[in-house]
View: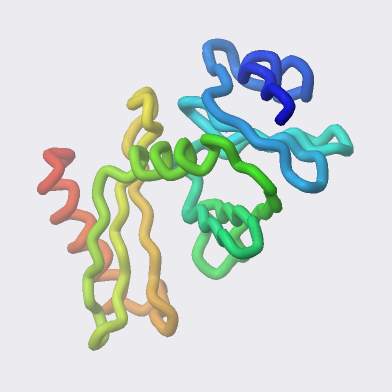
Length: 172
């Protein structure tokens, strides 16, 4: 089995652009030649065509691993009604990358609660922050299918749920 380069060497060798102070903690090479790496603050990818990608952990809405196909699918937080950016990579071996992705995304979620609005349909109030704690708390809503965020009842429920969540976290 070939020896895996150290994470720092991966950054230099594959054109990963990391801000000062960030370092690669885990990485893997995708089947298409992309290098996908995780740092304390973000998921990074260097594509074979020279393109790069950086997604802060608090901007990762979901990261799903399909063990049968070897596909890691990452979707970003987005605006209601707009398509969420989604990225997918196929791996033969992910090394420690999956473990890091799970840990970092989970660490970015401070609070999450589902609030029923119409029967079982409702919305989620979510508080996220960079795992480093350097950025302010970011509050977002996720609406169940069939709810209209512009409906006055939904808006009132969302506002009340947000106020309650902020009070519960001590953030008035």
